[in-house]
Image 1: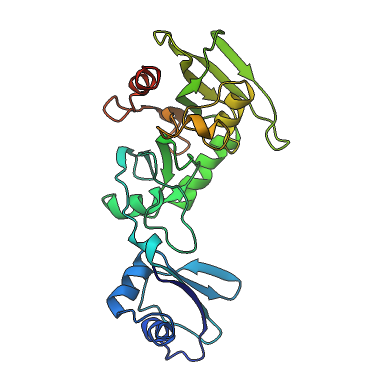
Image 2 (image 1 turned 90 degrees about the vertical axis):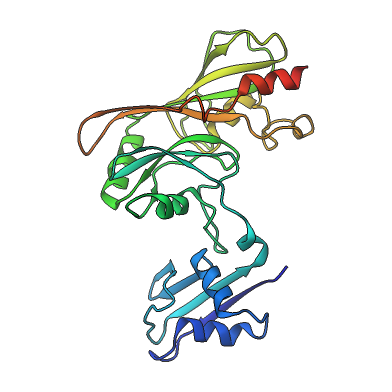
Length: 290
């Protein structure tokens, strides 16, 4: 698999993106103009201008002296296929989208074509920009708020900061949880964190429990860390759980509910993950305990 990177200073306003890349690439690989354009479309090219470095997708972008093109080509990354997400609600200024397990929220310098934001930008009608307001782990699935303007992104981010968005999840955990409700406030990275766990289904008569989760804060890996700290690691969590016990399944964590008062219209929004998209956590539990 071919992998290389280029950092190309622009010396003349007559320089073109494709010509600069094509000439520089010859030392690494004989890439056609079509391959270069494909890589650019998938997010492999960045333009440094002054203090700003931004992803560049327009091959006809006018360049000026002192610009720098940064090109990151990774054949393996670029060959990855994008998973299919689903639009749950489209409120024009922002959307609620179902992210499947395995789809990342963030890209890398090498590409971003498989991310939830890029999927939204290319699949929504009419097409609009997409800004992350919050995140789900790559291995998790469920509901995500995606803003389509900087105004909406700022307003929705403010709701998260003020803890005015209700976020509910379901998880499968190792261990038989005996308490009906558990509230933990163990800090994460020296920052306040609050998570509520409660039973979602008591029909599983084995050392696996299905739990509802509601979080008041949004720390990285908060649910996974708090569950593991309580002695009930999330099934499939190879980072904070027992990697040796979780080789059969992926992370069993799904965002199932979002509710808030829209900061733009003041209307109540109450969104639940549809049954057809909700992972069969009980089915997974029965397979693991059979």
